[in-house]
Image (cartoon, rainbow, N blue to C red):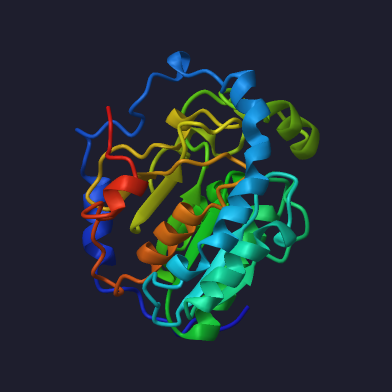
Amino acid sequence: MPHHQFAAPPDLPQIRKEVSHEPRVDPNPFDPEDVRAPSWLLMALEWRASFELGATLATLPWLSRAPHGDGHTVLVFPGLVAGDLTTTTLRSYLRSRGYDVHGWDQGLNLGPRPGVVEGCKRRVLELADRSGRPISVLGWSLGGIYAREVAKEVPEAVRSVITLGTPFTGHPRATNAWRLYELAAGHKPHAHPRRDQLHHPPPRPTTSIYSRSDGVVAWQCSVNAPHPHTENIEVYASHLGLGLNPAALFAIADRLAQPEGAWQPFSRDGWRAVIFPAPRD
């Protein structure tokens, strides 16, 4: 194991305090029993993902106007039964914004099997050690669970957390992928080894990007409860297209470009109000 030379961000102790001493904040804003999996109509509309990729290619001039980053390292985790190939477009775009982007490098994501989370943690520590400073972690769907949980275990190595359509709260079966999860992971969703803590946010700036028209994950499962360092950004997208959607890509670039230790919530001022819906109850 390498010697870790990176320093913890200056705001880490304060953020840890805010997370640890906010008992008045309900970490689960929805009653799990009231949340149902998306309708089969929304599931059938997941074919939209191919059009979202086309929309991204058509809007590259606009996406090129997203802020450039400071070159820090970004680690991207893929979704269920997906691998690094599925995040190629996302990683390529972030490289164009100036980031040092890496895939998770563990093959297909077959769920939290023995050693997987530990492998993710080693990957984060190695990349942080190599760069000499904390990295950002980004996860699509189930990959977002890894991003959040690793950030809880080694927060000193993590700068920020971004998830795309990640079901970190709500009923374990409030998705249309729970049967696939059982086949891939070898256990039921409610038997996830970290289930009771999944809805608690990491002690780092955390952004959840989600869509109310997600055909795989109930959108309520991807909503952070209010905390000083959490936020939710709604986009018009399918679940399979979240990592290809131009609005989602712009939001990711905007979040990653913030100066370290100076995190602020996403702004919907001006033209952004047309593309990004305002928060709703």
